[in-house]
Image 1 (cartoon, rainbow, N blue to C red):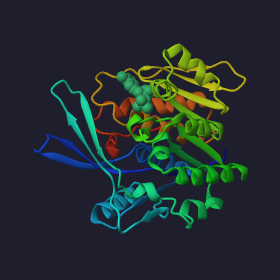
Image 2 (cartoon, protein in one colour):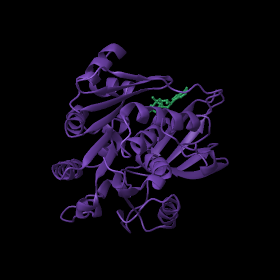
Image 3 (cartoon, rainbow, N blue to C red):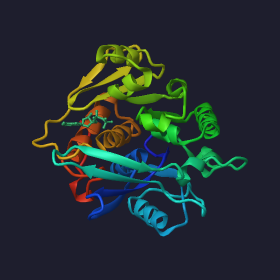
Image 4 (cartoon, helix red, strand yellow):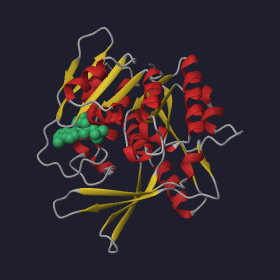
Length: 314
Ligand code: ADP
């Protein structure tokens, strides 16, 4: 891939409230693909990587504040749609005495679900010619109704036919697929139409009902994309490039893990930043592991800008 490139990421960003139930709560916003967009924008801007985030919000003050914050991160927001009848989704994070986190979601009515309005082209579809690449996740897929997913896949097909690259992260939330008898069918399609996929093994085990890690790994090796990136927490990352021996890339040791929220999302930002600059997969995995190792040492998914590493590819 060339140095100057434009990528769009699609998904849902929600209002986050973290703290004590009916007590003091800290407000923020978050969402897997948005987190990745932030890290990719931070790491890729100097190299000419232009990042657009595609989603739908309301016209309320919270939606306005989110858009303003994304712009400050250097993210292009011209693909953000607004629906005055809707609001962003919301989730709370309760942390118990042992540091264990529980998430509660209010997202059934959220604006992002309707990004692909019936009979109306979205900015993402309208501006397909401007894009070199596209990234989305299993959560992006899950929040859409079936018609929206069809539109997404049709967009993906058209982008690839034009030579664009498509990247997919298997992020899985069982609860979001409750109403759907067959999540595997949708995941199969996403895998079959991606150039590169990022996998968390436990998620693939849950999606495909695979009993053990060894079988999950074998399943990953058989996936259709040429490039399969397997994130394994603190264990070494595995990159399987078609026709080659798997590449094993160690993670970075950290003195203390504070919060793993956003680890995988930041990994994706680091990996994509490197790949979109033409770096090889091994360098990209190291770059992903580097940023993720810093993120796990901070609370929350998005670390302060001052904590960002100065990147060099080696
Ligand atoms: P996800 O957040 O998507 O489940 P992982 O848990 O595999 O993904 O974490 C993504 C990346 O975060 C890993 O590849 C690794 O670089 C980093 N990471 C996660 N946990 C740790 C840890 N305990 N120590 C160091 N790095 C970690």
